[in-house]
Length: 405
Image 1 (cartoon, rainbow, N blue to C red):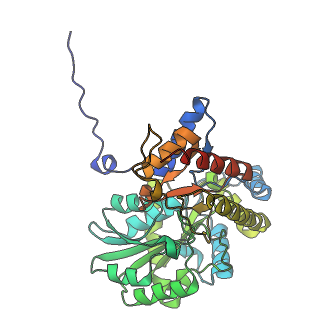
Image 2 (cartoon, rainbow, N blue to C red):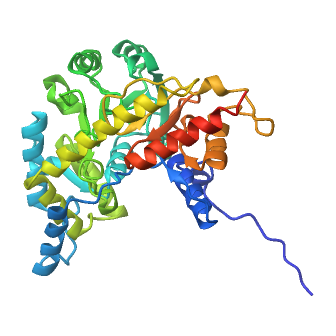
Image 3 (cartoon, rainbow, N blue to C red):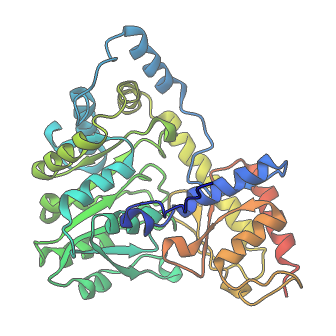
């Protein structure tokens, strides 16, 4: 009987060295626990718990009933949707674009990837404001660039400063990426801070900026400031946005960029070889979202603000949890390092990964380790959940943490 020796699977180096998304990994673990009959409260994914507003769904149904949107759309998106995005950017962000500067993609994540692959050459440095959304680093590495991190502190809403940015720029710097409002911290750059960033970059015309504004509508400061609205940055800023967060349309997968025309063309070329256009019906829903009633979007933001205040009050009651008051998005990013080295007699907490697994095992609450976001002393808690679940989850967290000494 002949026997064969299995050879290693020939996965490419770029994939074998690629980290799995920590947010998706924790969501998968929560599903595994639920499959075993364990009731897990998931505060791990950045996903609105609201349903997509009815009028947006009706826009999709109307497109289906019309029967005119079953063919391949243009790679960069339907013209009327791109014009509606231009109108929105002019109205809300005070930036003027034409439709040929807009590329609609399969979510903001693809928009970021398209841009990074269109700009970055092997060895180029990309400055990342840290803490950062988990996929920034992986996408830069896939593009064979080198991420360079500048770190904000909890005392400053985790916002890295213009001075840090200036110190990090080298002749190899090709791009900068940040999010505001921030995932994972909820920090929001105000006008003064954004102007300081623009002033630094004005002296470095070779550096481009990817401004991730996906949480734009969930902003509690009263003003959302887009870097591209500063005249000196218009030609070097790629604004990334989408419909997942502000319109509760995560599963519809519609994102977009607004950029200088040459970058938009490059991104469209890139997208044309990978996915082609975004789903035709999802685009019609997105058009409805932008051109009809924004009331549900504003109502969701008001509810997130109420939940933020509730969660802040509840977290204050847990010894050893150090947190700031986020200014946007729907996350808390508390420093939990006071628990490092503590034990319940069986489990010892050495880092934020241990902390999250301890809460999952003992409290049946899923959070995400801060190490995935470049901040190993922290964890991310999403309050995109019902008040009942938030109260229940934080009570459980408080209870199991009290067992650590």
